[in-house]
Length: 74
Image (cartoon, rainbow, N blue to C red; front, side, top):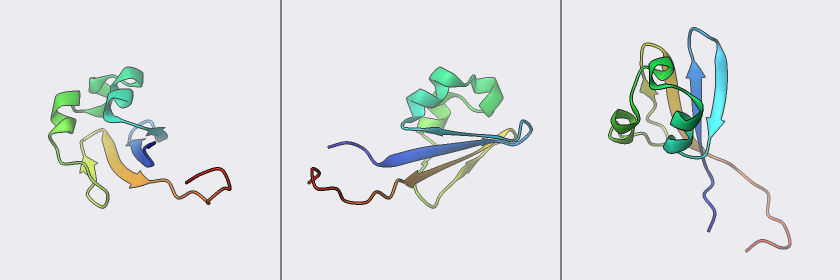
């Protein structure tokens, strides 16, 4: 089963938004200094839908993608 979650990273000072499928993907694309938090800290921060994580440099939110049903999907 594929995951429908998405993690939104908003970089405050750069005024840029990025969307990722996992926490690991965030740190493959962005440096911990840019986010203001290490991967291990974010993994233990309790990131969940409706519970954003804020640092001095970024706002990180988790949500779900809403998709329409297609004939080939179960």
